[in-house]
Image 1 (cartoon, rainbow, N blue to C red):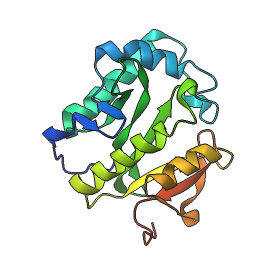
Image 2 (cartoon, helix red, strand yellow; image 1 turned 180 degrees about the horizontal axis):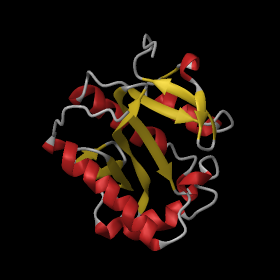
Image 3 (spheres, rainbow, N blue to C red; image 1 turned 60 degrees about the horizontal axis):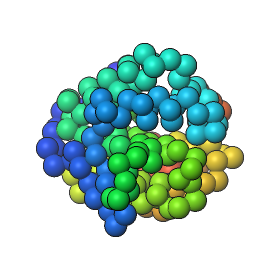
Image 4 (cartoon, rainbow, N blue to C red; image 1 turned 120 degrees about the horizontal axis):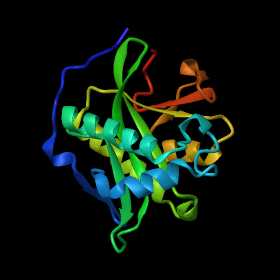
Length: 186
């Protein structure tokens, strides 16, 4: 069953700023970064099904992200430092179906060279804060592998809480769930 929430656009979502970061709607100029990040085995180590093989697959991924933006007015952002044009990676929320209800899936994937600097936590916090302000009725979820401790820390830093009762098998192993509403029973 496909879950279709009522479209709601937020034109103010195309750019967010944090203390160190600029989060901006991806555009065709980000295609090289999308391809490089999603062909990096280290960056996709916990989600190997996300690895891409061809530039065409990266183009299709950008197209899917663009459709989310065009339909809802938000999605995944390209993450950069204020003082650099080089992308650090991507982070944001998109609508997915979960247990017959629409939710916002929090995604964050940064290049390994930027790991350990707190950028993922800063970007994820901005995305969750945006969702709470602009889509307060939507549950935000993050699905994390049990062995991916760094990603678990990012979800917690972003204000999500562990929801063990929602854990399920995923494409790349068990999905541990982190959610924005600690009382959500699913």
